Amino acid sequence: MKLMKNFLSAVVRIWHLPFVKYGVISIIGVILVGAVGDNSLLAHIRNKQYIGELADEINKYNEQAKSDMRKIRELNRNPKAMERIARERYFMKHDDEDIFVLSDDDRSPQFIASDDETTE
Image 1 (cartoon, rainbow, N blue to C red):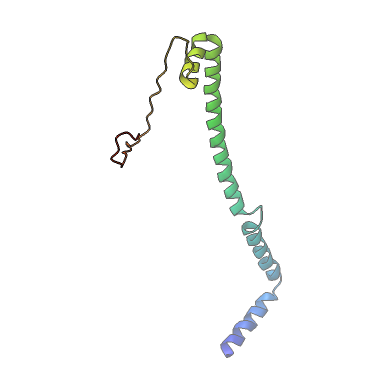
Image 2 (image 1 turned 90 degrees about the vertical axis):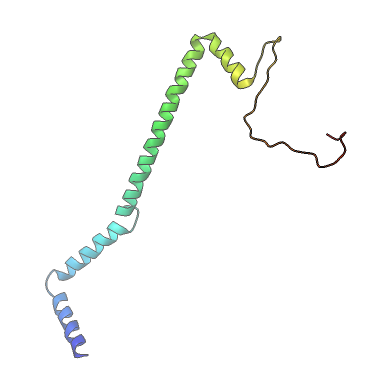
């Protein structure tokens, strides 16, 4: 008990020294500003990561735009390219042609369980 009283009296004496109060309050204030709020160090780090992700996304879309511009230039210069795209993507054909679409789907054959051979 006496040890506790001595410790508290020492803390009170140190607290009343000039500029100690101001230093402690300033340190607490700096810690609070650095750890809490919208302008904290943690929020700053999160924002930097988000900016990096957005920069990567911008680069991806810029590359996609360049590729699309190359395709548009090819379509404007070469009429055969337009026909090729119409045939590949939209399955367009000439009147005297037939189109067979082959699928890459991995489907297992379905068997009919009944003994009736006329059922499909």
